[in-house]
Length: 64
Image 1: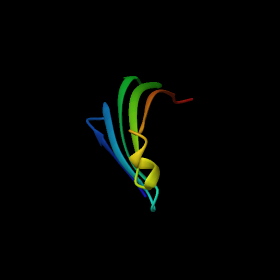
Image 2 (image 1 turned 120 degrees about the vertical axis):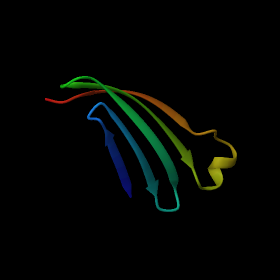
Image 3 (image 1 turned 45 degrees about the vertical axis):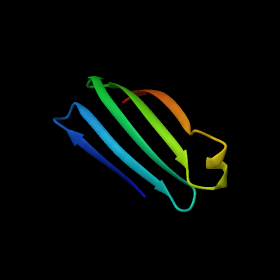
Image 4 (image 1 turned 90 degrees about the vertical axis):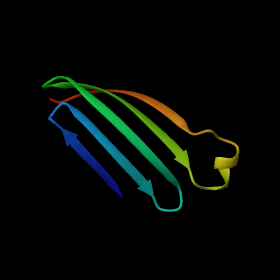
């Protein structure tokens, strides 16, 4: 299940839930009409979450 919200067509915020697996959050900032820079954090909700602090991602999105 994923949901994103576009704020003033400049910032995009979102949440993601994978059934019995993980929860994620993401944020994008539009640099141009064709490019956005983003960050995402993913945290496991399974037993592996006891050993992992989650994953961080830096994203660069191009709209062609």
